[in-house]
Image (cartoon, rainbow, N blue to C red):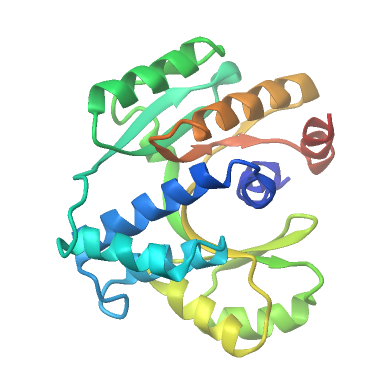
Amino acid sequence: MSGHSKWATIKHKKGAADAKRGKLFAKLIKQVEVAARTGGGDPEANPTLRTMFQKARDNSVPLDTIERAVKRGTGELEGVNYETITYEGYAPGGVALLIECLTDNRNRTSGDVRNTLSKNGGSLAEPGAVAWQFERKGVVLVPTSVSEDDLMLVALDAGAEDIVDEGEMWRVTSPPSELNTLRDALDDAGVAVESADLVMLPTSTVEMTEVDDVKKLMNLMELLDDLDDVQDVHGNMEATDDIMDAAQAD
């Protein structure tokens, strides 16, 4: 089963088709700004900024908009001081959730997350109750129109740890430190890359066997993801591809 990992692919497709491009752009710009504030404005010396910069470009954020975000992060332009907060929670069925946020108002963000969880059958968890079930990885999505042999030939030599078929996409994982090297190698080899990001992947999973339960979970995760301050939502659900596809289709 690889259903739990399909959330990265589903989110990418959702983002690409999202009519609310302004909201997506705002989140990406915020990530660029925070990365520049944390590690400096030179993408070559700041791997996180380089990743976020490229992520924004992959989603068609204008270059001048990204560059202004970098300058706000480095203090060359006036900007907002965002705080990084990760909330831990549970969804119906005992699925663990990690909710990564960037905010300039902790009380607002906490209330939004708490209310969204409670209104949809979830709850906040104590710090540390959930985080141990996830580990950060580099994740690159590549269309399955690329042959597995061609992808493996490049990816494994560039630090990839695993390649998983998710239907329309290959999910290529790497250590976080190797993400940019992997992306560069694929680009240099002419391999199409849909997205490249740092993602929290589950190390243990909760199996879900009912389509309705998966639909409720996906709805909750999308509602959380749509909150302005939420940058990413990770869950440790697992389901067969048939169940995931049926839940997504309805």
